[in-house]
Length: 159
Image 1 (cartoon, rainbow, N blue to C red):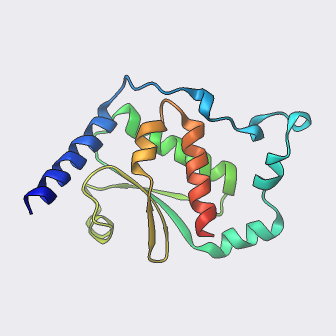
Image 2 (cartoon, one colour):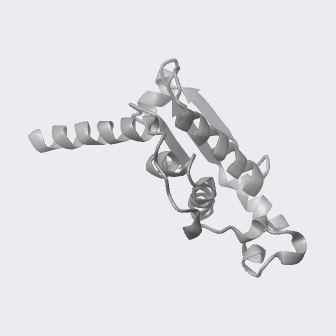
Protein backbone atom coordinates (compact mmCIF):
# COMPACT_ATOMS: atom_id res chain seq x y z
CA UNK A 1 0.00 0.00 0.00
CA UNK A 2 2.88 2.32 0.86
CA UNK A 3 4.44 1.70 -2.57
CA UNK A 4 1.17 2.55 -4.32
CA UNK A 5 0.91 5.84 -2.44
CA UNK A 6 4.50 6.70 -3.35
CA UNK A 7 3.86 5.90 -7.01
CA UNK A 8 0.72 8.04 -7.03
CA UNK A 9 2.59 10.95 -5.45
CA UNK A 10 5.42 10.61 -7.97
CA UNK A 11 2.93 10.51 -10.83
CA UNK A 12 1.18 13.63 -9.57
CA UNK A 13 4.49 15.45 -9.14
CA UNK A 14 5.59 14.41 -12.64
CA UNK A 15 2.31 15.64 -14.13
CA UNK A 16 2.60 18.96 -12.32
CA UNK A 17 6.19 19.55 -13.42
CA UNK A 18 5.19 18.69 -16.99
CA UNK A 19 2.51 21.37 -16.91
CA UNK A 20 4.63 24.10 -15.37
CA UNK A 21 7.86 23.40 -17.20
CA UNK A 22 8.81 26.11 -19.64
CA UNK A 23 12.40 25.19 -20.32
CA UNK A 24 12.07 21.70 -21.77
CA UNK A 25 13.76 21.38 -25.15
CA UNK A 26 13.60 18.46 -27.54
CA UNK A 27 15.09 17.93 -30.94
CA UNK A 28 12.75 18.43 -33.85
CA UNK A 29 15.01 16.21 -35.93
CA UNK A 30 13.31 13.00 -34.83
CA UNK A 31 9.93 14.07 -36.17
CA UNK A 32 9.40 14.95 -39.81
CA UNK A 33 6.01 15.23 -41.37
CA UNK A 34 6.21 14.67 -45.09
CA UNK A 35 2.65 15.85 -45.53
CA UNK A 36 3.60 19.43 -44.73
CA UNK A 37 5.47 19.61 -48.03
CA UNK A 38 3.97 21.27 -51.06
CA UNK A 39 1.89 19.11 -53.37
CA UNK A 40 4.76 18.64 -55.82
CA UNK A 41 7.16 17.62 -53.02
CA UNK A 42 4.95 15.02 -51.34
CA UNK A 43 6.51 11.62 -50.92
CA UNK A 44 4.83 8.23 -50.88
CA UNK A 45 4.19 8.35 -47.14
CA UNK A 46 1.54 10.99 -47.71
CA UNK A 47 -0.65 8.65 -49.70
CA UNK A 48 -0.97 6.49 -46.60
CA UNK A 49 -2.23 9.34 -44.42
CA UNK A 50 -4.50 11.16 -46.84
CA UNK A 51 -8.11 10.32 -46.15
CA UNK A 52 -10.24 8.62 -48.79
CA UNK A 53 -14.03 8.58 -48.88
CA UNK A 54 -14.08 5.16 -47.19
CA UNK A 55 -11.69 6.47 -44.51
CA UNK A 56 -14.06 9.38 -43.89
CA UNK A 57 -16.96 6.94 -43.49
CA UNK A 58 -14.94 4.83 -41.04
CA UNK A 59 -14.12 7.93 -39.02
CA UNK A 60 -17.75 9.06 -39.00
CA UNK A 61 -18.80 5.64 -37.72
CA UNK A 62 -15.93 5.32 -35.24
CA UNK A 63 -17.54 7.29 -32.37
CA UNK A 64 -14.13 8.49 -31.23
CA UNK A 65 -14.07 11.46 -28.86
CA UNK A 66 -11.10 13.49 -27.67
CA UNK A 67 -11.29 15.00 -24.18
CA UNK A 68 -8.93 17.57 -22.74
CA UNK A 69 -9.40 18.14 -19.01
CA UNK A 70 -7.85 21.31 -17.62
CA UNK A 71 -8.02 23.54 -14.55
CA UNK A 72 -9.42 27.05 -14.40
CA UNK A 73 -5.91 28.52 -14.17
CA UNK A 74 -3.83 27.31 -17.09
CA UNK A 75 -0.15 27.56 -17.93
CA UNK A 76 1.25 28.03 -21.44
CA UNK A 77 1.80 24.28 -21.81
CA UNK A 78 -1.81 23.53 -20.87
CA UNK A 79 -3.02 25.98 -23.49
CA UNK A 80 -0.62 24.53 -26.07
CA UNK A 81 -1.93 20.99 -25.49
CA UNK A 82 -5.45 22.12 -26.34
CA UNK A 83 -4.35 24.17 -29.35
CA UNK A 84 -2.16 21.45 -30.90
CA UNK A 85 -4.81 18.78 -30.29
CA UNK A 86 -7.49 20.89 -32.00
CA UNK A 87 -5.13 21.50 -34.93
CA UNK A 88 -4.32 17.80 -35.27
CA UNK A 89 -7.96 16.72 -35.20
CA UNK A 90 -8.93 19.36 -37.78
CA UNK A 91 -5.93 18.58 -40.00
CA UNK A 92 -6.36 14.81 -40.04
CA UNK A 93 -10.10 14.32 -39.52
CA UNK A 94 -11.83 17.59 -40.39
CA UNK A 95 -15.09 17.89 -38.47
CA UNK A 96 -15.44 14.14 -37.91
CA UNK A 97 -13.67 14.10 -34.53
CA UNK A 98 -13.81 17.06 -32.20
CA UNK A 99 -12.11 17.97 -28.97
CA UNK A 100 -14.17 18.49 -25.86
CA UNK A 101 -12.25 20.92 -23.64
CA UNK A 102 -13.50 20.46 -20.09
CA UNK A 103 -12.72 22.48 -16.98
CA UNK A 104 -12.28 19.62 -14.53
CA UNK A 105 -13.03 21.92 -11.59
CA UNK A 106 -16.57 22.53 -12.90
CA UNK A 107 -17.46 19.20 -14.56
CA UNK A 108 -17.80 16.44 -12.00
CA UNK A 109 -19.65 13.82 -14.06
CA UNK A 110 -16.93 13.27 -16.66
CA UNK A 111 -14.04 13.75 -14.23
CA UNK A 112 -15.48 11.02 -12.05
CA UNK A 113 -16.26 8.79 -15.02
CA UNK A 114 -12.65 8.93 -16.23
CA UNK A 115 -11.11 9.28 -12.74
CA UNK A 116 -9.48 12.60 -13.64
CA UNK A 117 -7.35 14.30 -10.98
CA UNK A 118 -5.22 16.61 -13.11
CA UNK A 119 -4.79 17.93 -16.62
CA UNK A 120 -5.42 15.05 -19.00
CA UNK A 121 -5.73 14.33 -22.71
CA UNK A 122 -7.82 11.27 -23.50
CA UNK A 123 -8.93 9.66 -26.75
CA UNK A 124 -12.02 7.53 -26.14
CA UNK A 125 -13.93 5.00 -28.21
CA UNK A 126 -16.60 3.11 -26.34
CA UNK A 127 -14.95 1.64 -23.25
CA UNK A 128 -11.42 1.97 -24.63
CA UNK A 129 -9.60 4.99 -23.20
CA UNK A 130 -6.20 6.02 -24.54
CA UNK A 131 -4.33 8.42 -22.25
CA UNK A 132 -2.03 10.77 -24.17
CA UNK A 133 -1.35 13.13 -21.27
CA UNK A 134 2.39 12.46 -20.98
CA UNK A 135 2.97 12.75 -24.74
CA UNK A 136 0.88 15.91 -24.82
CA UNK A 137 2.73 17.72 -22.06
CA UNK A 138 6.15 16.59 -23.27
CA UNK A 139 5.60 17.75 -26.85
CA UNK A 140 2.87 20.39 -27.18
CA UNK A 141 5.25 23.34 -26.95
CA UNK A 142 8.59 21.86 -27.97
CA UNK A 143 7.60 19.41 -30.69
CA UNK A 144 3.96 19.84 -31.73
CA UNK A 145 4.36 17.73 -34.88
CA UNK A 146 5.35 14.76 -32.73
CA UNK A 147 2.21 15.22 -30.63
CA UNK A 148 0.06 15.51 -33.76
CA UNK A 149 1.56 12.27 -35.09
CA UNK A 150 0.87 10.52 -31.77
CA UNK A 151 -2.75 11.73 -31.77
CA UNK A 152 -3.23 10.51 -35.35
CA UNK A 153 -1.63 7.12 -34.66
CA UNK A 154 -3.76 6.64 -31.57
CA UNK A 155 -7.02 7.49 -33.33
CA UNK A 156 -6.13 5.43 -36.40
CA UNK A 157 -5.54 2.47 -34.08
CA UNK A 158 -9.04 2.89 -32.66
CA UNK A 159 -10.94 3.25 -35.94
